[in-house]
Image (cartoon, rainbow, N blue to C red; front, side, top):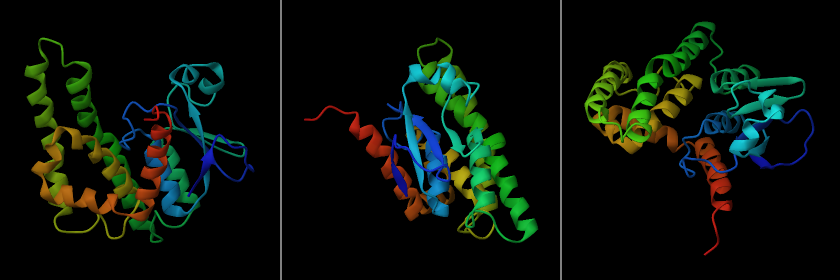
Length: 228
């Protein structure tokens, strides 16, 4: 339940930062989407402060995020950066994204870290090869190597998921983060090689909380486009 953009609010309502003009053109791939989705899943209202690329490198934002990136999360005296840390904090302070059982809770957190530390790195490499390095003479040779590294992660992930709805029982932060990572593969077409994972991502995209978060970030992008 996105409560507006650039509005002053009570300290109890968190404020996150996001791109003023997202480079993904509203496709939901920017990292603020992960935080928006988590907040929507737990029913926590939030405010958004939009930043230009120039503002992200200014002292005011660097005080919140030392690497000058988005998103950040501010609530009262608490300031957080890094999507994993923010989403985990949200899940720990609201019902809905972590199981009550201690062991299941620990497994959900393990899956979140697996998404960020094991599955995402080679996928980010693919983004680099396809976009930032595509004009390099060695790009065509490097691309299949990176794709193979991604498959080395997706094969066991798909096997583990099998025909289950989610990774470990009910939907958790593990699924939220894993789907967020897998969505980065959509433009490449690689996700289509794994029907179980494609269906898994589609189920997550159909969740009402995901749709609300997606629509909120898309509205920001649309607002920056010239009227026809």
